[in-house]
Length: 240
Length: 310
Image (cartoon, rainbow over all chains, first blue to last red; front, side, top):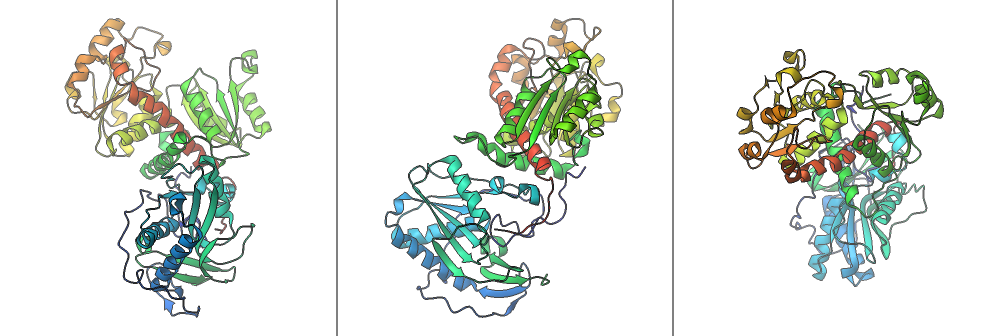
């Protein structure tokens, strides 16, 4: 009997279900209340610096090369918020759905930025796509998180928010999950990082940063709420 | 190949994993389309060699909500009534390539025996007087939702303990999660060796009522009673039946649970049953989520290999 799925769960590409390094049982719970935007997040918008190999990070989660600092992440999010407003002047029709785990925190910050910039409060929910994945027989049963739609999505524009866009399979699963509960007018995708290597014909409408990567590299988005700091790092095979 | 044959197959962490998974899956019941594609292409066989309504339907609904295909096999109307042996039935299922068999049998140990004949996950849905693990898990889930915790919860399991597979599973599971269990049974309906259960046993119900969080009432299993275990229903009701008067002695926050089907007027008075119908109905609703969790955790494991994508 192996009821305890001992050991670390499969580390994903930094996006998707975001269970990197998690072990069962993974506690799940409601979204943490919104936090105040820090000074960096409130800084004026300016283009991100060109990506150059940063210093090695020996921080919280794993060694790796930092490609976006906390400030870069804050600026990228602010730019994404502006893009969303530009594209959707009627913010009332939007629903932000953060894809667990880190997408939820990113969507929370986007919602705060949208409110700060436009004064409109955009409803925000969270989406766990585990039950809709096409690799259930390959990965084994991942721990489940909560799914919460804050409003009826019929006729609204659902904005999926994820940390890393990679193969596109997580987004396919997310779209299926959305269609299970209603018929949105449109589904848009916001990804903080697009690392390429798509396996499905999916692209993001708004991207924080395009990061061409090798397949054996792993992109990890760090968020303060989970990882005690913000940033994006590349971990190469053998780094851990 | 993994199975759920008994609460002994689990430990506190595994129970927590199942309850947490069920908590996530419960939300599906509140959606307009109560279905997810998770177990598409898998086949679950409900092999019910003993009568059951809620357990069989609960497993059927759980499987269907996860998009598994379901085969319902009952003894009546099958070749079992022509004398087909349990082994031959098992081999037929094996040949049909089912992925999981949910088995209910009057014979204790039948699910274990089945694991030797079929290459599928076996889930015990009640075997004789032995075990009914998913019932215990759904009860724990219901208690946790009602009280927000299991550790330290004061629970009395009352009634026909001798014949009750539910009581065996329930007490084991509650002890694993750190609940404080007392078993109350008529002297003739206690198990032969109560000390093996390692919980306090008593025959007098009234003194334990005032300090309870959960009063768990067992069904008097008249179909299993081949001799007289108590003088009359009236006698049973007087000493161990839950009526309005006993209910009034429970703390306000206490809940009354029953695994069903209820013998109204025997172990539970009709008005008490009606008054606590909500939580007993909750048990049924929660049963689907817990069985979905068990199916997901067992069947989702098949052929697991590491992949990375997002």
